Every structure is written in structure tokens, then in C-alpha cells.
Image (tube, rainbow, N blue to C red; front, side, top):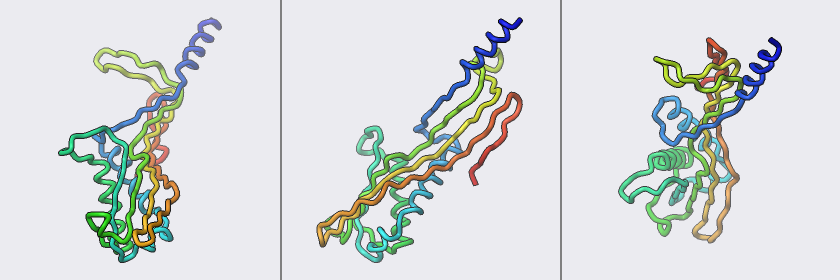
Length: 194
């Protein structure tokens, strides 16, 4: 009997693992909220002392984000959203006047988004995924923490066209999370989106 108990404990120990999933499509409201709230947090946290010099000035804004190559007619919705959010911050907070080309501008802002997205992590003791008739693939959590995060990260260059000088801003990061503790028959939220 001890041998079977040891074997069961050993199998459960092997199932205690961490997994990570990355999403590039934002189908659920939770995913959309995680991404947009992390972007909002990132842009709200931009240091005012770097951007105060832009108040009332003519600004050319360019954003960059690594993403799959799309045809010239397609838009990149995530980058477009991030750029619009950054434009609105410059218009609202610093009363910048945005222009279409760098030649018309007094200053250029080049914002590099290193990360915009969600990731999922799971850590704990679970059964391996099993096929249950009528249910499909399933697993049982004995004690597991599921973490679902929205992450935004980036840095920027501000170029002064008159002085031909560039200043690099510090790397900015924002993370929004919604986590839950899973037990065999119940899930408990650890933290939730506001």
C-alpha cells in the first residue's frame, strides 16, 4: 500500500508545473481590458519633466512595434490603438499640435513599444489533461494559481529639430493582472480588474 501511495505522490509531483501561454488575438473582454489598462497605465506614467518641453509645440509622432508583416492596406489594430492613446495624451496633457511630417515639426517623438499584450501563467499541482467523455479535454486542479496579465513596455526618443539633439527616455513598464487560486471544486479570485 505504501508503494501505491508513494507512486501517486510521485505522479502528482510530476504534474506540479508551470505553463505559460501568449495571446496575440484579443477575443475576450478580459484580454482587451488587460491590454488597454496596461497601455493606459504606461502612458499615464510618462515622466512630465521629459514631456513638459513639448507643451504647445508642433510635434511629429511616430510609434514602432514589432508585429507580423501585414499588407500595406491592412492596419495593425494594436499599434494603431497605442498610437492614438499616445496622441490623445500629448494633445490633452501637453496641448501639443501634431503635424504629419518631421519637417513641419519643432520636436519629434519616436515611441518604441517593446511589448503590448497578454500572457497567462499557471503554477501548481494539477492532473495531466485527461479526455473525459462528454466534457472533452480537462484537468483537475488540486492547488494551482492561474495568472493572467496585460503587459505594456516601451521607451521613447524626443528629438529637438532646432538643436538637432535627441534625448532618450527611460524604459517604462506597466502590468495589470487578474489572478485566481484554483482548488478542486472552487476558484478564488486573488485580484481582479477594477
